[in-house]
Length: 61
Image (cartoon, rainbow, N blue to C red; front, side, top):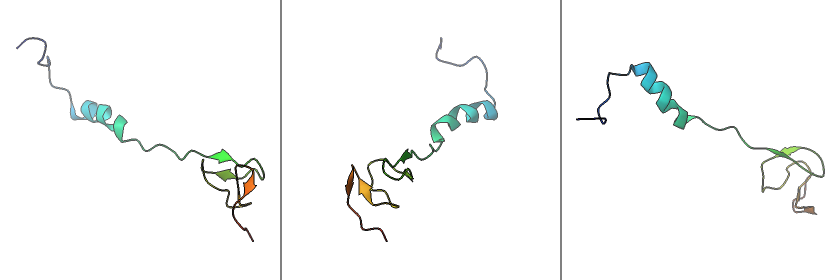
């Protein structure tokens, strides 16, 4: 067959370690609000002060 066939069987653990890299769940990306410093998701209004792009968009308490 040539170079297409593997020379030996890989163990299940070795195979699964390679496959597991594509199933990792990335952590949430957070940035600081420029006005109050709270952690917010990017491209969303801040829940603690109600600002987005230096303008108030939400009425917060």
